[in-house]
Image (cartoon, rainbow, N blue to C red; front, side, top):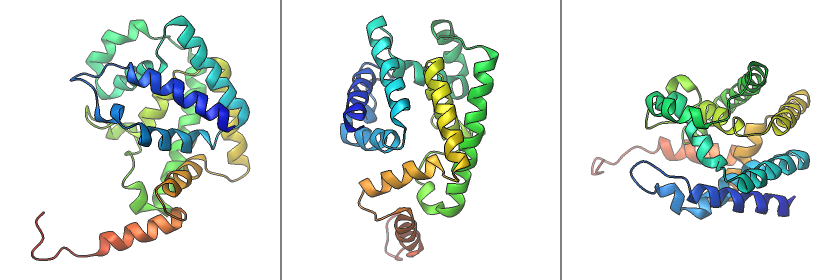
Length: 214
């Protein structure tokens, strides 16, 4: 599992470095450590079969000269920058209605999971992406839109594998997004999501001094 994750992250980082950003290199493209923490947290919650499928997709794309990370961000622009998206859309793989239906069912489930996380850990989730596509702006990409962009880069086989996996978690009463957040906060030194929530709530409850500069 660890080797699979490392291979995926190195390929994704290479694609990320080759993704052109309007206005030059984005600050996140220079922050390898955070990239590794975020992607490791996500992939460590995936099944081995799903990791193998995504690695295969990345390797196939590399051989074909495609950049799946650039394509992911281009797909997000359908919501955040529609005019630019219309220029890029002809260069993206177009998906049929059945695949789009599967994608939206997955997204619906994960939005529900995110809302559950927001209710349980409001001060932690406040530091994450906004949840719904309706909250998108040119400068803010929601978790829903991000997921839609990411799933859009998966092959049909990998998407179906992902769908089966999230359904299996749902049946077990597990929340994939909560699992990922748990890994993230532990990477930053918290004991758990509960620990992170308590400390973030306590920090926000401290009043500003009258001498504070805001």
